[in-house]
Image (cartoon, rainbow, N blue to C red; front, side, top):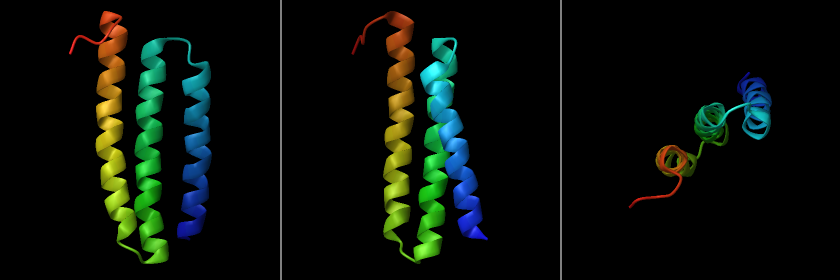
Length: 85
């Protein structure tokens, strides 16, 4: 059952990646990138259940934090045209 869910999530991530590449506007692409990161984080957590390994949870947490920071950096860059750190 979990393997079927993983395949469905992989398909949804592929659709989200297509929206990142083809998206009509920049905000659409940023939202799609955020959605893909959430889907991939969920996949990592489920893979931890499938393989009965807690390392996947650590990887999922690190990936979620980096994905959140990535979305903030992209939004700031496209708002101002450059990064004002």
